[in-house]
Image 1 (cartoon, rainbow, N blue to C red):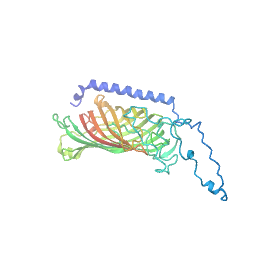
Image 2: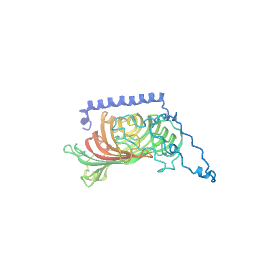
Image 3: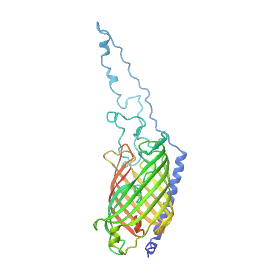
Image 4: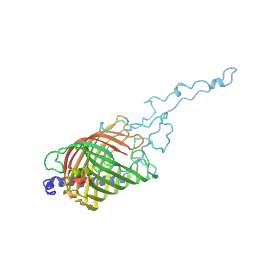
Length: 398
């Protein structure tokens, strides 16, 4: 009965899998190309051909010695910086991105000395945001403040803080007709770096890193006293490596699904399943531009239960400002596709768009916007149910 609901969509699901597999191969190919052509740090040209008039020697005043001469004002030509465009001074290269105007938003520059005079080289602030991928010194770091491999923005099973209110037009899991209506999904968790041997800029560090991630994915029913309908729990340990624009990870994660107590009391005949995945994942991520990331990953579960099967694929693309946004923020767009073996390689597609703010002294990212998801329910207790949902949400990554 469960399987028959998906056979009619088999062709669409096979097409989805066919798209995901070459996407993963494309990412790996770009990673290899990048490894053969390492980038070099941006070097600013030194001003040449600039001469300044010598300071005139002080003249002693009669009967007063040299002190009055030394108290004279500095020549006006030395008291001011040369105006922009002065002949003989090379202009600095542009520091903005190379993308469309809507994504090449202004970003916050290094603070002035009056605001942060204590900043020193090597402190938790970049030497500049002009070249995010420049090689920097590597060292051992315990619990650094950023990540080499970050969570996928539109991934429905990524560890972060987030919440989405949405309207689902498909029937509820305990009925075959009608519409689900409004539901409230929240993610309570995060991803953090434990130890790294690599660089330590504010944005896009490079090197080797061990991370830890985990989250509870909770669904409430606001139309029924906000009852807890279901909750998935995830814990993982990614080991990652990044150089230049390319990042890769080899990770383990555990995911288990649980039916809510209130839901079971109100629907005692609903069949609860013990859905479990213990999975090994290999993922790759590549930044085509500073503001555009593509990624793909494949997973194989060595232990499954409750209808889960071993294989899974995931891939997507993200467009978002790479640098600190300041108070004005910047737009973002993210698309994720997730395919699983127990659904005959079907799955879901999630699209998010809205406005984002990125921190000035860390990679912390806050977003608000619109989300649309079509396909398999990301709550694994309802593994054979489909959703067609749209709503608003907010997400925080740290």
